[in-house]
Length: 306
Image 1 (cartoon, rainbow, N blue to C red):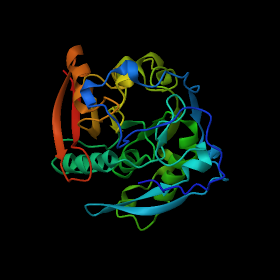
Image 2: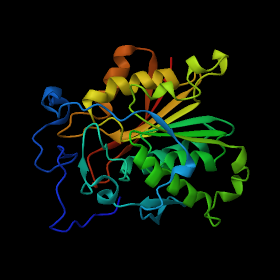
Image 3: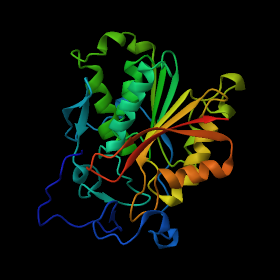
């Protein structure tokens, strides 16, 4: 998880409204929450492509190892107070959506992808990958190590990309002791890009969306990966619309990991799947269910066009 921030008493509280995603005092009960009771919408930041050279060198970035059943990746740690002026667990709708925290779903997703690779169900070799709501970017980094030809990272906040995602990618790529590093030999030939912005508009920047590609047969991403992105009821339709614009047809695959329900904020895997099922153009299958007692029940799902 992200580093815990110890704020001194004289730190000035932010003037904008914040809330905690998993507050123990939340009175909501997941799917029964009323979206009208959620925080009022705030205009999102502009959509931009973030260049690797835009890393914020003034923000302290440290790394620690994460072991995933025999594969070790590096996860970065940055101070949320330093980047956004917030405590570690605060979210600000329209300003900061938790991208500096490493959520369990990212690790669940990588484990599920490894299982499907081992069983021969999927291969990332030569594929285009888009990670939505990337934060640390570990699933996308994993895709690079197992042969993806292009990996594009998207997060709501440009600051998350500059302060965490890009430094975390660089740390993993420079880790010569990584067990998969021998598979990753042509860094200069791989298309790695970073995009910030709201799901309702960021497709205008993504290069493999059908409207940006002359040959629609080659449009879209072969894989879309996302973890812990379905917690807010209000964003689910925009997220699903973006997925449909970006996923390659008819062979693209979406993998997403999340909690079954996010108590107090109303989202979850089942609420998102209800949006998918209502549309009727994608088929879903449960890949994994995790009930380890460390949190609410977590799931990994695979979606493909019908």
